[in-house]
Length: 119
Image (cartoon, rainbow, N blue to C red):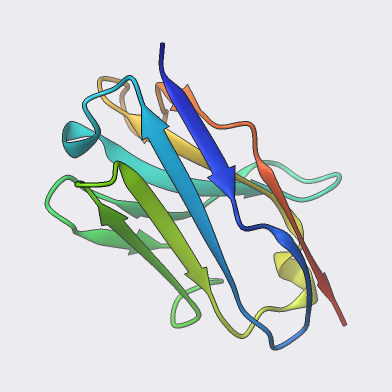
């Protein structure tokens, strides 16, 4: 059974930082493309960042230079370091894994973690 468990969300002031973690189990993590996506109230879910099997990273324009995605294959964990947070970053953040799905789709999803940035 595949599980993706996010942690690290919370309430932070604008300009602050948070680090999200996603612990994966039940899947070949080192062969998975991992992504972070978010959904704000009343908005569509959007991709925030992704990291490939060999560590290539991808970012939405809105977070470039502020967010950093990384992975630790030994720990089956992917991270999202979020700096210089803005009110518009407020959303539920989801971790996702892609093994066989065609981009931009994912095979597996976490339950989400709330990030709230106060202005």
